[in-house]
Image 1 (tube, one colour):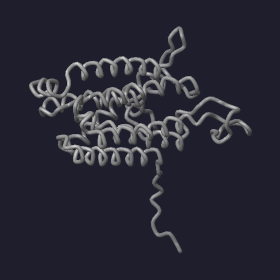
Image 2 (image 1 turned 180 degrees about the horizontal axis):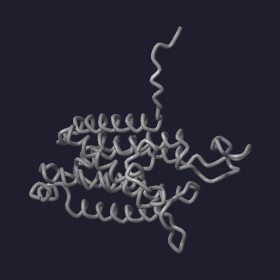
Image 3 (image 1 turned 90 degrees about the vertical axis):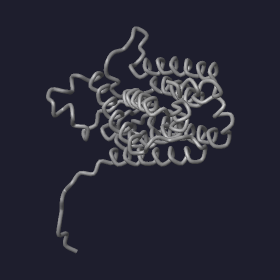
Image 4 (image 1 turned 90 degrees about the horizontal axis):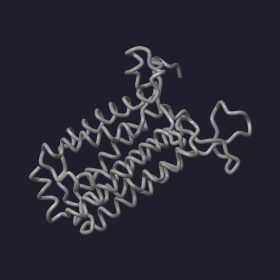
Length: 262
């Protein structure tokens, strides 16, 4: 059968999976809010903040780590060519949501707990997109022979670090969703603890994975050879630990009142 129209449009698998991750995360967030009775924000506002702030933060951090790749304004906005850093997107979207929750007088700790499984799910899908895209790859290894890059010589195999991280994130998505839904009294008694624990556990896993990553990490390295991702993980572990302490010190019967007054 003769093809009448050929638009010859490129299909970006990574971009499609990122869209799937965004939609799946939003759906799960809405479902968790309904199941637990947590007051949710307007979904349009929520989606706009996550997408715009997340993309901007992820791009800005990538530019900061790889300034040599950008020589024009066109390079800065060419998102279809790749160039996003998860930690930058996480910081920016979390900050944007925090300001929005306070402005709308929403219980920000409880809402962040409802977002946590969605964050893990969306991040997991994105990591499998990295696996298909061939970025964020691991170092060479003789332990397993299931993954290699197209430019690698025959017999050369690598750690599929994208799959390691994606699989771990899927487990975290299931675990945090179960805690949120099956132990609602435990979670609601100290809102924010679930979010803090998730960030802390993920950061430990990410810190360890960085030792077997072999892609260009960008930026700088410390005297003890820690990558920018490991430095960000240490910062997040510290922040998450402080958040857990705060949430235990100010539980729901007092903390939420303070949150609403703010």
